[in-house]
Structures are given as C-alpha cells and as structure tokens.
Image (cartoon, rainbow, N blue to C red):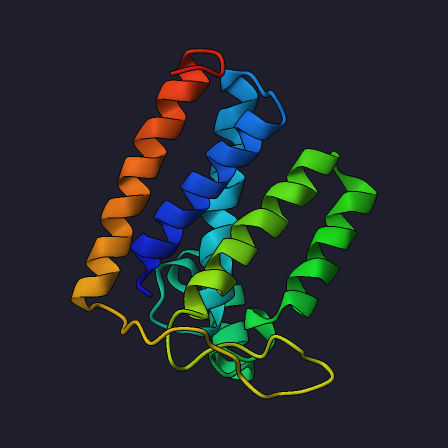
Length: 162
C-alpha cells in the first residue's frame, strides 16, 4: 500500500481508539496524530518513503541497514517499541503507537508480498489477499477509509452518537 493509504488507516484507527476510550476532542487529536505517524513508521526501511525522508539521518541509516518488509514490518518490533513507550509515557501514547503500526502491518498483509508475522521464530512472510499497491483495489480501500473517518469524526463531535 502507498503511504497515503497507511496514513488514512492510521487516522481511522486513531479515531476509533479515541472513541473507544471516551477521549475528548483534544486528546483524540493527539491520539490520531500519533496513530497516523505510527502507521507510516514501518516504511522507514524504504529510502524514498515520506517517513524516511522526514526523519533525515535516522531514515537513511535504517533504510540502508534493514531490508523492506523485514524487522520493521513485524509485530515483534512494534510490541517492543510500544512496550518501551509504556514504561516511560502515558498508556494512550504506547497504545496509539501499537494501533497505528499494526494498521500498517494489516494493510501490508493484503499485498502478496506479506510480512513476517512470526518473526523472530520464522522469516516466512504471510499475506491473506492479493491487493496490488497502487491498483484500483487500493483506491477502493482509500475511499472506504475516508468514509470511515468521516463517520468517526461525526460520532466524536456528537459525543458518541450519530
């Protein structure tokens, strides 16, 4: 999936989490910002990705040292990172990172290239669909995410009801 699709999924996931936790608008914006950013982070292993470009030296080092859809595309990686944040930051920040990054991983499992779900026990990549990056089906996914985001914003603004 393209970065914009991952970002939309992160926004949708963040709004759902904010709604689930009963967050007010201010906290919902923070949560959604974190989930949107976290949804982009697994692609830091691609030199040309927006997140790699924005993170300057870190992006260059990571995209050189790691192959795409390797370590940064594993649940293990994001469970570890979220666990570290859980020790030093409020729970909602750690959960937002976990939810955003997992939205990325789930979308990448729709692509035939898949991700190494069982890492570090197995490097075998798993997928459950054959949606091609940039194809018409990805545009459909993006449209569904936009509709979902609009509905979530309506619910959030109306205090939990449509």
